Length: 359
Image 1 (cartoon, rainbow, N blue to C red):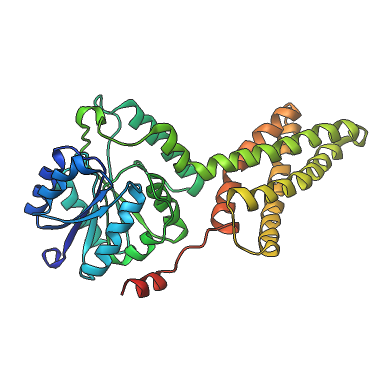
Image 2: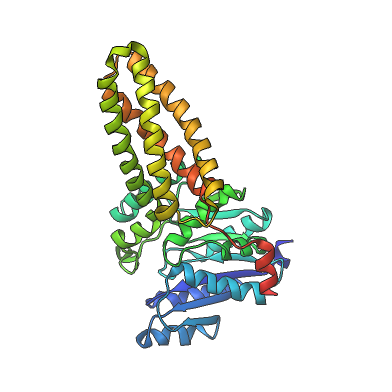
């Protein structure tokens, strides 16, 4: 059955090196239809894409638009020109992925329709660049905290899927490296299964040809989280300041002082946090009444859990100020995930709408 399925390789490329043409030839020999996207590499790299045209469809951006945009350009072409039973494999142009692993990923996706297959590397080898090892550990931690799902390689560019996922992938936001992380974040929300296969770890020249900028692209990948953290810190500063003031003022109330101060401080800080998140962090288009109702419903749930945990920690002998800090840290990730995916979701194009547009 697998021999009847069309295998399509999608390669976004920006200022590639000599190995790109060799990769394209090997994929062609393995019976892949190849879609290569030149993401504004410029005249001096034209020779690589000209040589690849013998074996691949080459799509060109006149200027650099980013990896996410290049992937969507390729996916749009594939949606229009490839068969409905095709399996798509995305690969990086820098030589990190072997054709053998691409074939394995395609077969795995064909056997599991509707699943996003991830080709996951090992990061414990001596040849793995430090920036790759650190970056992957960080993104894996953030991803697990945000979604509850465990992925061992969030940065892998080797991914495989059947055509049914193409409309979903076209609707995911992000023009540069953040796109691939956004796809992973959206999968649990859309109930799209993730499946991992182990692949060979290849780094040529210490991954020197990678165009990933650690600072700039990390800010894009973690943009919402950074903004949410700043918003949360602002809310926490209001919350903590009022909590400190009120516990001192209401000290004569005895045991009820801690929970009462916490509730009053949280009400004020919640409104501050809601206003910032709605307007500046998630920039939702949903109606104020709807988002406010959802937000304060979430706030009530978190407040109850927060207050119970805080009172328990203080009752067990922990310093009341330290207990407050620890409690807020524990509820931070839960609040971020709920607000991003439930309360302030960015509107995605529906699969049906994208299918109609592509026809």
